[in-house]
Length: 333
Ligand SMILES: NC(=O)c1ccc[n+]([C@@H]2O[C@H](COP(=O)([O-])OP(=O)(O)OC[C@H]3O[C@@H](n4cnc5c(N)ncnc54)[C@H](O)[C@@H]3O)[C@@H](O)[C@H]2O)c1
Image (cartoon, rainbow, N blue to C red; front, side, top):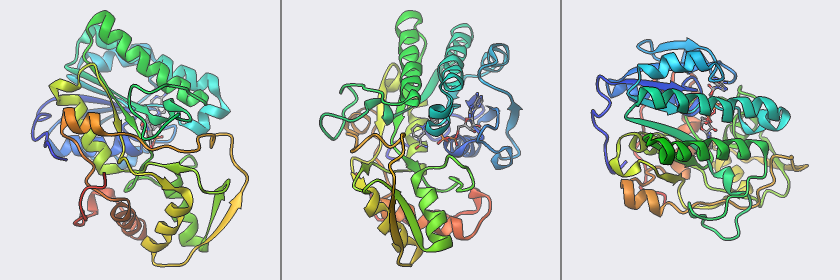
């Protein structure tokens, strides 16, 4: 991170919805290190309470519970709203997705209207862009959600900015692009492609690629995503803004599989299988100039380094805090 938030969180009461999940858990660990008093609200749909540091106050419950949300937001000076049904679960059950991703977000925003925290940070997704007309994708480019998940993440985002405009609520949003790395557990049935490939390559020496593998994504290392998320919470220029969080580098799924083989130090065989319904985006890479310029954030970890760190972590299962970050070979975008 090029602009260290330092102790901006020290002593602050921070609510993280979805804080027992992959990205939420990493945000929570950073906040605890920065001296925040962290409360996590999570229904453990995919999250795991065991990943939370002992200092954290954990509340098991759903963001769809308006009274519970209101009580927790009332005490928070910063809210990271990260709880969400994922794309696979959303596609299977769009109503549940709607209730959590849109209804839950509305609950957080309504509660925040009363409590007036310093900032609400909403974690959106680059899936809101659909199949872009041109790449890299800018924040103001067309939004064409192609899945129930993309609709609900965009709906939540629209609510955030409607509350900013209508009620002066201090919100900011980040649109993550394929976050991967330490803490993303392959035993989560909805984990991302990086985690799945690692698990299957390590176990069998093979990976199954949906479609021809020439579809592309922009892979963001977890520490970089956390840095951007924390900056969105404290930077004065982040208020009322949405930022792409990625690297600006496009990688095909075939290349990703090859790089995972290299990180594991073994040859891996590809098997091309049927395209899934949720794989309807052909190319995705985001423009990160806005966050670079306004928040002075830039990704620090290259895909190669991030995959190597992930491989090391997967080889030595244990709490993610035990991993000593390795030196990296510089910015990736
Ligand atoms: N990981 C990515 O690449 C990525 C990309 C784009 C956007 N996002 C967004 O980032 C956020 C975190 O995603 P993640 O990858 O860590 O996923 P995750 O599934 O690991 O984390 C989501 C967390 O929310 C919790 N949750 C789900 N429904 C809930 C509910 N009704 N009430 C309370 N908690 C609930 C889950 O148990 C889980 O702990 C989500 O908002 C997601 O949409 C992630």
